[in-house]
Length: 78
Image 1 (cartoon, rainbow, N blue to C red):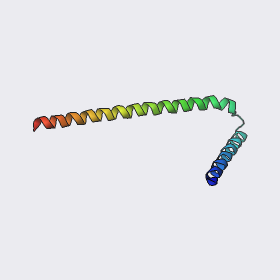
Image 2: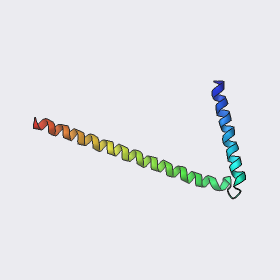
Image 3: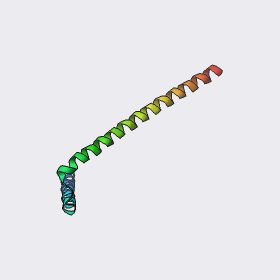
Image 4: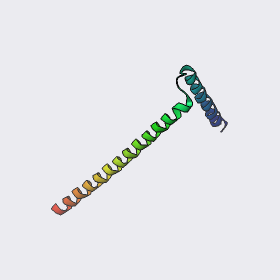
C-alpha cells in the first residue's frame, strides 16, 4: 500500500514539475489562457467518443439484424 501511495505522490510531483518547466520554457503561454483551450479539446474528445460509441452500437445492431434475417431465410429454405 505504501508503494502505491509513493508512486502516486511521485507521479503527481513529476507532473507538476513538468508543467512548471513547460511554462518556464514558453512564457507566451499562461495557465489562464490554456485552460479554456484544454476544456474545448476535452469536450471535443468526449463528443468524438460518444459518436464512435453510437456508431459502434448501430453497426452491432445492424449486424445482429442481418444475421437473424439470414438465419430465418435459411430455416425457410430447409
